[in-house]
Length: 157
Image (cartoon, rainbow, N blue to C red; front, side):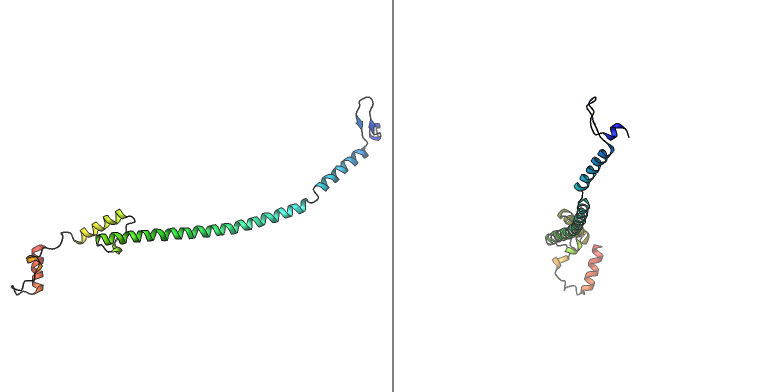
């Protein structure tokens, strides 16, 4: 062995400390022990962190399920609310125009009114039929109602 490896101390010429291999081994070994002691509970902490992450994930899953259920219920409520508003609107237009509720299919008041007007125009294209004598029955002619209707149809169509 060289003189540096066997003598520990200060070199008076350079002012540097010199260490033997045993000294270096001892220093390194003590540092290893310090680091091991510092992280001795690493495995326990890692296990706890893993367990915490699992619990957090389980809670997140439950929260996601609850959120999805709430979203589905809200969507259902929105659909019911919209259906009720449309039904009420159609009933209102039906009362105003006399067109049966079931014949209206619009989703807003304007479209329902337009549709009701079109239905009324289609159902009664020329207005009410013209009736002679203000609709009073004619007993003078001696004709049956069937014959009167036939005459009326021939006159108007």
